Length: 244
Image 1 (cartoon, one colour):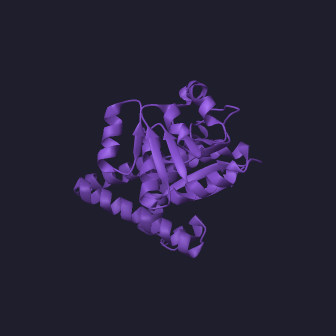
Image 2 (cartoon, helix red, strand yellow):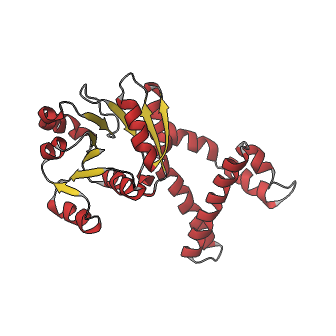
Image 3 (cartoon, helix red, strand yellow):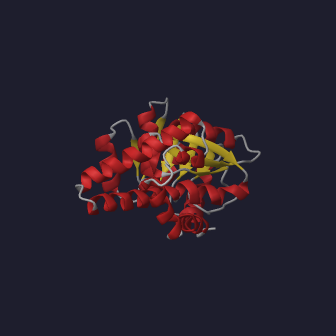
């Protein structure tokens, strides 16, 4: 597949790196706002075709991924419209709508390491299947109704930041208890990875898994109750709904 990525910022860059790491049969052209950014990518990934000209990149592609800031979507599409004839246009720009876009997709920056949780908006266009297959190369994909895209964005697109904030809080707690910061972070990350693996492998509901480590009168329940006293569950739900 000939793939062009318009925009090589945080999200576009993560996707570019993830697709390269996937070792899929992709010929990738990228664009960026500055030559400095392109030079950096080219130095690390010589196989990339790099250009500052969005229209040139589109002309080389079968599929175009638009990874620019939401407020730039319309102007970039206007710039490349003539070159888009016969091409599939996929957008990963949050909440940006344009009639020329064939598929709306919401990945997250873990795509760089093949661990994105990506949402593809359901639709009649064959581009939806194309998008699902393309983004499956960089993580897990769910095809969802349009009304569910915002929830997906908050849970995964934004949610990755919320998970990292929780990890930071665990790290800070570890430091307060006497651990070195690097050790505390390593412990927090491994503990989270272990929890995720346990749920994934067993299919247990989180509460059922919690019961396995919650002894009557023990220290785990004391910590859980402190989270409840602080409104932890409510804070997480409010956090997720804040962007709706």
